[in-house]
Amino acid sequence: MRNTAPFVRRPMSMTPLIDVIFLLLLFFMLSSTFSRFAELELSSATAGTAPSAEPVERVFVQLGTDRVALNGVTVTLDDLAAQIETGQVLVSLDTDASAQRLVDLLVRLRGRDGLTVTVLE
Image (cartoon, rainbow, N blue to C red; front, side, top):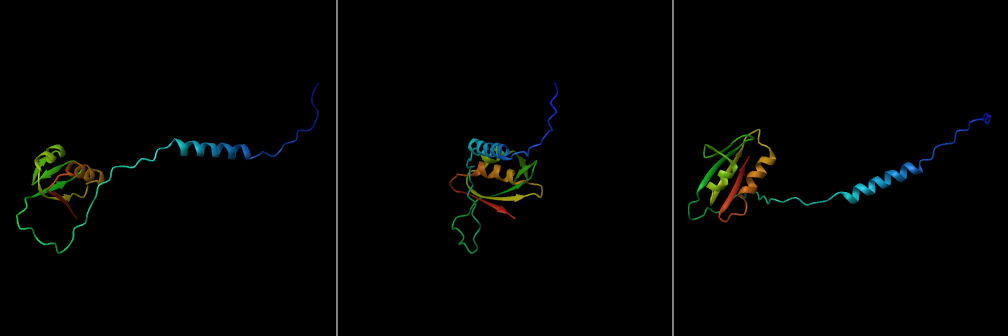
């Protein structure tokens, strides 16, 4: 026996879809982590500072994506950190140097007494 009643299409309810979207939103909000990344303190150069009485040893570092040069001699980042103890480091960035590469250099040089790092523009 065949059902001869006419087919009546009911409108679809959006409530289950909205419930699923809110559940997914809640899941992703609760499962994500909000971690704080390490911070590097950068201070800007001030004009008119008095020169110190004793001479400061200065080294010049050229930083690029593939190379690091200390006073014109190519070195690695680890060797650079081992060779610089105190004094002033002047960092010149190549046009292809990335911000991450600069942060890698600054992380290796931070926290040393008597060492100041200046990034040249």
